[in-house]
Structures are given as C-alpha cells and as structure tokens.
Length: 248
Image (spheres, helix red, strand yellow):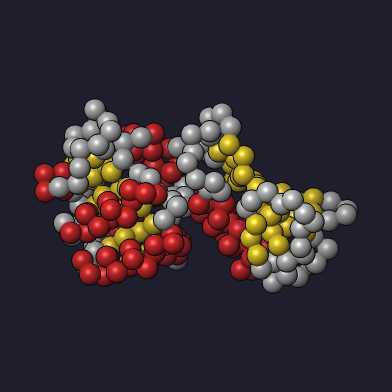
C-alpha cells in the first residue's frame, strides 16, 4: 500500500516514520512550505502511486486538499481538526467521487479507549446528581485551535450521556456557571503533546480520568491503522466506526 502524506510538519514526520516501520511505501510527501517534501501540491504526479492519503494540515487548507484528492479517487484519512462545521460539504465530495474517508479529532488508539471509558463514567454520573462534571486539556504553545478537537469530542460524549448537562462552555466564564453547563478549559504552554482530563466532583471527593500522550507516536500509528482500514471502503466514517469494526 502506498501512502501519500499531506502536510509535513511534526505529525507528517511521525506518520512517515510509522509507515516505514510498518513496511508501507511512501508514495509522496506533499507540502508547499517544506523543502524536504517530494511535491509542493496535490496533482497527478504526487497522487500517481498513492492508495491512501493522510492529511494533517490546517483547518483552512483541509477542505481544499480533500476536494483535490477526491478527484484522483484516493481514499483519505483526515487527522486535521477545526473543519467539522463543513462536514456536510465533505460528505458530498466523498459521495460524488465514490471514495472512502475516515476522520477523527484524535487517531490515538489510547485516546479512543479513553473515549469509551469517559462514556461509561458519564452514564454512571448521570444517575448520581451529587457529582458535578468538568474537563480541561493542555497542549503545546504551537497548537492552532483551542479547544482541541479531542476536547470537543470528550465534551460531546459527556453532554450526550449526562442529561443534566446540555451545554458545553469552552471560553472563560465571567459569571456563576449555570447547572446545565459543563465547563471544559484549555491551557497552551511549552511542548506538551496533549493531556485531557475529565473530573467528577462532590462535596465528599473528586474522581478524575486522565489521558496523557507521551509523544506523537500513538497518533501516527492510529492514522496508519486507519489508512489500512479505509482502503477499499466507500463513504465517510468517524473513528468510532473503525474501532467498532476492530473490537467487534
């Protein structure tokens, strides 16, 4: 299987290493701003030997990249976040070109295990009103979006499963928080790869669930797993579909 890497930043480099370690071929590395990339743009030459493209670019570039890749009938793995307001447009592109696309705010297998743990914990907290719920995330100071796409995914899992919480608040709150609101805070500093915490607090005690990434290797390995999984499939999938398929 030939992998085309779109975006050759830190994640692009991790994906390259992971793909080579798994014995996969690198069909092309596409980045207009990198002298080490094999190609500057998505075109016939850069797509020639690719079976699946993995995109870790930026929110303002990803839709254009998906549109271009789809014209070459290549399957796509999208790890870029910050574009989900355009999901209907992407669905149309995927359907029109009869390709497969899998996307996630976080391809780490560990964080996807964490999603399931949070979901089960939220279902328990839904029945015990004595516990209030909160979350926070920490990332490196180069991260563009805030909150992280992963934080949004975790927040959505919580409000979906805790009936008394139906509104996510990611910004600073300059007032008393309402009982139906769930506050999820963000911190940006240093070189932190990614930490996400969910807490359940009562007057008696606090329970915290925490996922802390040591490095970007887990994200890259998950993206490679997704590239193998999406090959031959048609339509658009979230990582939940892939995890259900793998775990049964």
